[in-house]
Length: 293
Image 1 (cartoon, rainbow, N blue to C red):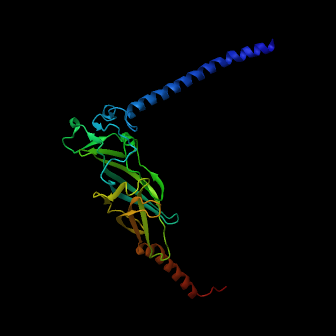
Image 2 (cartoon, one colour):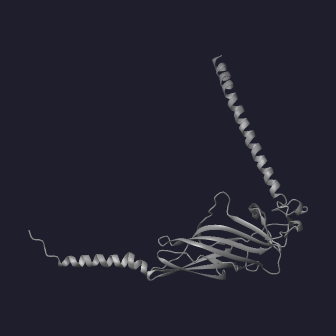
Image 3 (cartoon, rainbow, N blue to C red):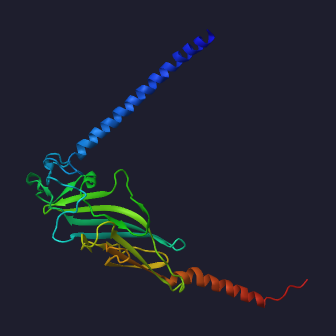
């Protein structure tokens, strides 16, 4: 009898907790279903092979998207697709000589043509020759698979939204622009310190497309901040192109060559002059008469 009363007591007191847990589970499932429904409204017809006219389900009603559009496929072109890459080197944030790395603040832009995407006639801009697209749309179109070789860490200085700009021009040219800061490994040689010159090669390379599929080249709107100032180094920048030769296939890439020439004046004031003063003081101490007691 006592055992039966204890079981009834446990059932009465545990029933509200079970009901509350079931209600929370139903709420979470409803929220997830709502999010999936909202996401499906945005991505409908994009990122997959279209089974009907993609333009009717496009996330941007201002665009005409070719039927059968697949964002995994390289845009059709005669020969390798041409991608223009440009950089705005805003600042060299620092040089870590012990860790052998440099930290850069940049804005990166890529231009390419995708004739499968066009601006609808009624939305053609009257002033500018381009149309701004929602940043989220970048996840559902083909974008060059560029990565930064030997990058240690990447950071995007966002306040609320990720700093990304996506444009499409009247001739179906797309421009992808983003602000990114990153630390890159740089092999340094200190044999001639403090007269050393360090050369850092920052490489922007295609990860999966070979040079037969994509051609990378520097654009015309590159910019280097002329007010970059480092305490120990003078900075010069050169841009060049290359193709990898250390894989079984050759991949296109671009090089930003950062030359760091150490300032001798800095070490004259910070190292040589203080050392000479201490040496003179130590040398003059030899001429002091011995103390007499």
